[in-house]
Image 1 (cartoon, chains in turn red, green):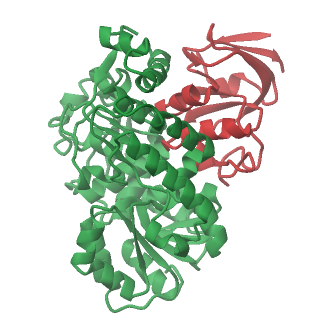
Image 2 (image 1 turned 60 degrees about the horizontal axis):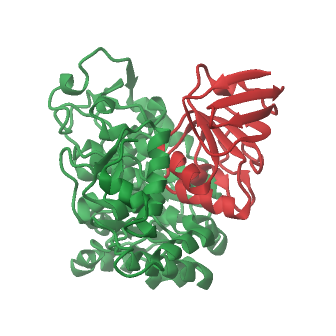
Image 3 (image 1 turned 90 degrees about the vertical axis):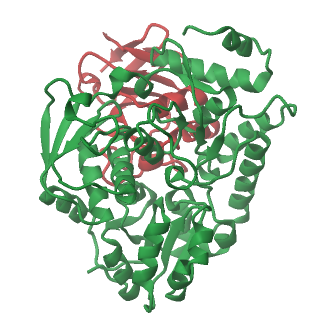
Length: 135
Length: 410
């Protein structure tokens, strides 16, 4: 087990499987929200399903629509389980707050290098902690 | 967060459920970012198209709008970003009754909340620009970066729910670009050429956005030896925000907070350079095909000056493929009156109003119309549309108009 502390956190405690890439995230730019997959051809997770996974990515990218879209995705349950970033922009925080989605951001070190793809993670926003339960 | 007596009353529900819900949302966001208190804002700009909201978001809005008259209205001037359609051209765009119905419900709810349906992402050119040090709550990343940088106003990116909350409470959490210390340059970008066209300004903004890389970066851009106009800064900023999530840049002797370099960069900064070869490479990276299915001028909506230039280039031509030019409801009547719409449409183009291409069910438009290969002079648009299944290509306005005539991008 490895425990990593975030500087910012919001949402409920969750446990799930990590989907990791050193790339950005925007619900508008990167996703086919109907099918629940990354659709931008140049995204490192292109073609992969994000549904029910804990996304571990570098940073939030442009597009104010993500604030509404996370809420809409959550309403259909075609949504990531949680979002984890090195750095975040206000839009995704606002979207996480509005859509009741767990989010952690800001770590000592590159979180996309610290968390192996496919690892089982436990996030506790109340303690601002990410635990790598199993690699 | 430190709350005023009025804010405690709002949270206690003394002003009704609508401002309470709005302030609860704002407290969550403020606490995430460590905001100490709220700051009063003078205007809000809400992005809220039907595609983004979906049924769930529309129902949420309708829930707010169902509150009693007198307890649901915005407290400050609150305006809107583009709609998800141009109702007058919905059939041409392939928009279905279900899409239009959702959009009509959004409008009805926002009107009940007292929101002004300006439907524009260029409010700084068409409604009222923010002023130096004015605290505002703007949505649309292009609006925020222009207002912060070219006007010296103070705003974070405010997504639809947060911008509406700011309209309903008249305040926003004081974090990010509302704080003086956050507005200093973090990166010096030396540019060794002067962009000549709007697509080049956009490509430069995109290249700098990629280098800057995240929301908290503030590029100081210098060296190009030109004073850009409003449309150039519009494309430059919109692309920087789109490619890099950047919300503020400075240009010494151009933007108001950087009358001198030292005003925003008192300490040495990391230096990077951007050359003409860099923006040519960015543009070339999108050139996947010679053939074009559709030409789109949008993102941001076109100003009257852009439409005038486009009309002059369309005059006397006949298009082989569709050409769409998207503008705001404030500009469209002037374009009609001055004959610009007539010239563009006489050539076979279509002038759309009050929407923006990528906010208007772009994926469904592609499927309904069979459009895939899209030429545009908007760097922001090419950055967005790949994820919607398009092959977007970036070129000058002149090249795009010629592509509309021949069906090929030269």
